[in-house]
Amino acid sequence: MSNTHKPVPVTVAYGDGIGPEIMDATLRIIEAAGAALEKEVIEIGEKVYLSGNTAGIAPSAWDSLRRTKVFLKAPITTPQGGGFKSLNVTTRKMLGLYANVRPCVSYAPYVDTKHPVMDVVIVRENEEDLYAGIEHQQTPEVVQCLKLITRPGTEKIIRYAFEYAKAYGRKKVTCFSKDNIMKQTDGLFHKVFDEVALEYPDIINEHWIVDIGAAKLADTPEAFDVIVMPNLYGDILSDVAAQIAGSVGLAGSCNIGEEVSMFEAIHGSAPRRAGQNLANPSGLLLGAVMMLVHIGQADVAEKVHNAWLCALEDGIHTYDIFKEGVSSEKVGTREFADAVIARLGKMPQKLKPVSYVQAQGRGIQVKLKPAPAVTMETVGVDVFLHHEDRNADNLGNPLKGLDIANLELTMITNRGVKVWPNGMPETFCTDHWRCRYKHPEGKAISYNDILEISQKLHAAGYKIIKTENLCNIDGQAAYSAGQGA
Image (cartoon, rainbow, N blue to C red; front, side, top):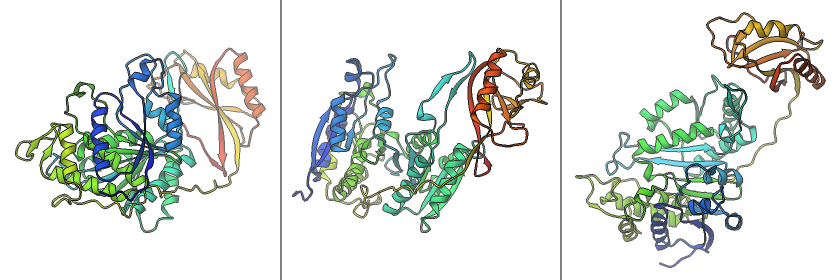
C-alpha cells in the first residue's frame, strides 16, 4: 500500500526470552499495514545486565531514546540476585513516564472470560507513592517505606485521565484511593481529583475506596470506564483487570511522559517458551497500536487492531487462548502474524470494531495550574526513638520531665497506636516509638525549639531515629493523629 505518513523515529528493543519473536511479528504486522517508522535498535536486558551494567541499559541507549522520544520495548529478563535494578522502574523514573495506561478489554466468546462486555482503561500514576523506593531499617525490628504523594504528580495523572477520556470518547472517570485511612497522602489524591473533575462537566466522575472498588471491579467491571489511581493500587489492579478480561498475555500498555513515551506488553519474557514459535504477540502488538496513535498514525493503528480482531473472530489462535469448539486453528507466533496481515483492511463482524482516527494520543497535553498559595507554620515535632523497653510508661514518664519552654510531650505512639498517656496494656509494642511534642498553647514554634528538645533527648541517652515537623497549612493540621488519640 502507499504510505502517506512521514517516517517517525522510534527506538526498538527486542528484549529477552520470547521478546525477539513477538517483536519481529509485531513489526511485520504494523509495517505491512503502512506504519512509517525509522527504527533505531538498542540492546537492553539480560545481556547488558550480565556485562556488568546493573541498570540493564547502556548510555548509548539513553541517547537513542532522547533522540526518538518513542520506545517500543519487548519484555526483558532481569537476572536474579546481584543487585540488578528493574529496567522498567528505572526507565519510567529517569524519563519521567508519569502515566501508565492499560486498556483491559474482553473478547468473548473467543477468549474465556466471566465478563464478556468488559472495556476498562486503568490509568496508573507511575513515579510516586511507595514506588519512590525510599526505605530504611530504623531499628532492629522496624523497617520503613515512605509513601510520597505530591500535588503536581497527582494533578498530572488525573488531568491525563480526564484528557484521555475526552480524546477517546470515554464517558466516566473513577478515582480509587484509601483516604479513609491515609488521610494526608490518599486524601490529597482524592482532593485533587475532585478539583480537576470540576473542569470536565461532560465527563461523569466518581470516587471509590480502593478495597470495595477493587471488589466491584473484579465482580462487575462493566460498571467502570476509566479508572485513575496511585501507583501501588494501579500496579496490582491493572493486572487483575487484564486477567479477568481474559488474559494478561493479550494486554498492551503505554507509559507516557512529557518528552518520551514507552509502549510494551504487560507480560514478562517467558524464557521457557523462547525460540519455539509459540508465544502470542498480541500484547506487544496492542502496545504498538497505542504507539501508532501516539505518533499520529491512527489510521494505521485502526487497520492493525481491526485485522487482529478479525483473526480472533476467525478462530486463529495461539496455544495460550486455543480452545476446542471455539478456535479453528492453533498457530505459532509467525503464523499468527501472517493471519493478521492477511486480514488487513477487513472489519470484524461480531467483535466491536475500533476507531482511532479521532483520538489524538500525542495531542493529550497536560498543563498544571499554578499551585495555590498557602500559609504554613510549624507547630510541633514528632521525634522517633529507638527504645527497647516495651513499657510505654517507662518511656513516657521520664520523657515528660525533659519538656522545654515551648514544647511539651503530648503523646507517644507505637506503630501508629497511642500508648501514652493512658494507653491500654493489651497493645503490642515494638522498639520504635513516635514522641509528639507541641507548644502547650498551640502556637508556632521555631527550628531552635526542635534542636533544643533533640539535644536534650540526646544528652539524656535516648536514640533518635529521625524527626518530622508538624505543620498547619492554612490553619489546618497537616499531619496524622495516633490511632486511639
